[in-house]
Length: 316
Image (tube, rainbow, N blue to C red; front, side, top):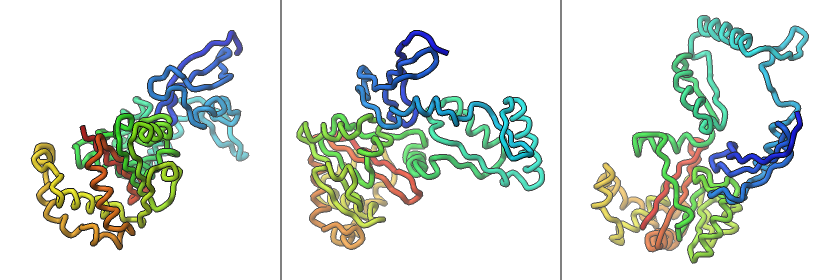
């Protein structure tokens, strides 16, 4: 179907950065894709995925209806009602024969951008009665959601760093120059990191590998894999020893600080130097620079479960 060319504006749904897209259409066919320069967040930026969104949409191999395998080993399209009937019949038989846990559910990415799928997920899992539920988050962000649940009472409460105002960005194990700032919802993360330095701020990357972000940072601090928690505890110990922690403010918003505090003496920079591979003076400098910065924020990633745990702080 063809028709006069027109431009429509949409948000890209391929990651949480949600960059603005300007799509030029001929009828219902996308003929060009560019960044929306008037989008308040992305300001004309799009990544390679956004540029290729028309190729994905029009790919001749894209499945546009359910497919059924024939006796000859080929596939033929069928209607949705037929597909649901076949699937339901076979799943019920499987569950009756082997139990609910014989079924595993995998929900792809990014259902977070589809409110219907997001709301349906819990009901679908309960209806099947299986304990085997997986998603892209199983390899990506589950530790972040678990941390939010235990810290804030909801896995959907995910604080983010104020990257556009921070003057000291401490990046532990993340690579926003490539990931586009996962969970920061910050299109063109590389440009935003440059802006920190342009306004007189500082970018410090702690990572075993000299990542793309580390190459553009003010300082790269190599760390031994698995040493993240020890480093952060030693930084906290340094600030407590220096008297820079407002314990009254902590008591107003959190429980358990006294128990944490009494364990901190075991995590002096000297004690964790071997575990982290970072010199004690460097650990103390990181802690004090972070505390002294006009505005400071951080992005922390842990790979204990192959996912990301972000610890974001903003200091007025």
